[in-house]
Image (tube, rainbow, N blue to C red; front, top):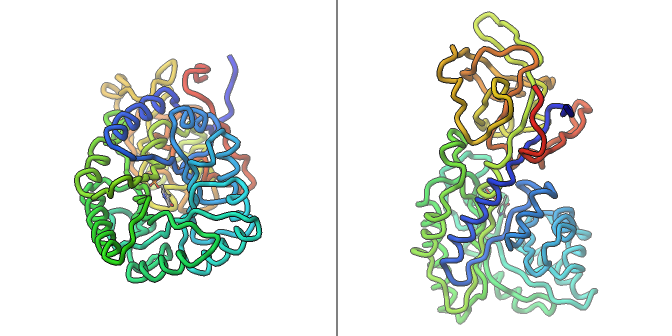
Length: 394
Ligand SMILES: *Cc1c(COP(=O)(O)O)cnc(C)c1O
């Protein structure tokens, strides 16, 4: 049997396809609603191919992501480009590829885009990223829509920046962009955003300004505690919330930028137990994956469900393992090998008795896992495989 070097990412592409089917079914209920996949969540070519086939556009935050999207076959007319600090080569890459829209975060940035577009004899489509001052009920490090964030243009400057854009020869104003944060599970936060956008549009209408595009960003969350119960996020309520509360002008296109909700549940990080170490009051399971492969627990205090997969002959994700109920459970702190005390996956994890060589699956790791991997401690980057292509070796 072929052996796989742990740690590695394992992707359930069948679940990804089902997720995209549900997403498309829900979004197609509405007119001129368009989803751009936020490629920063996961840029694995295996997943990009499937997402492209499902017809989604792409939301990029760097020149490298634009290049990866083009390489994966996404049409440039469906690419939007956000980011608070776009460098000149990134702007040129975007202009060269004739992307749909820059999401612009400041006037100095707008001036550079106008100048570089002028030199290329082009007109750049832009949306302004407006800071709606709407708080999302999520972790402080991933809340982006409050007034004190570095992101976006202050709400009260909306009209003046629009006037500036309208006066620029190489800029085509398409609309406004918003993004209030990530891992948002309260639909009220999206409702509040929709209501704020209505106020802005009413005000702009009074000034004689109508917009072709409104981009509401991303941020829909997933169930990290129960990935088997909720493998597919609640796309129905998400789009229905915008449909109910956001007043779409005639012909106007509403754009969504979902990352996590599309890919989080289809990925697991597979790691092997190296040692069981008895501390004074705790028991440590030291595994061969660490914050270099999955940094979310160290960076955000995020929790991922951890399952032992050694007792089954073949990995069966998305299915409760029956042996867990009968076997006596132990309590472990599951920790990585990196020389940082924050390199802990979780405390007090209840698992069947582990021994050296056992395999663990760290679930819901498809978003902000592989893309955030680093080579700290000169570790190799993790490989990735498709679930079901090879039996997991024990
Ligand atoms: C990160 C990001 C997204 C995607 O966020 P998710 O929480 O993964 O849906 C969308 N838009 C912008 C501007 C972002 O920075």
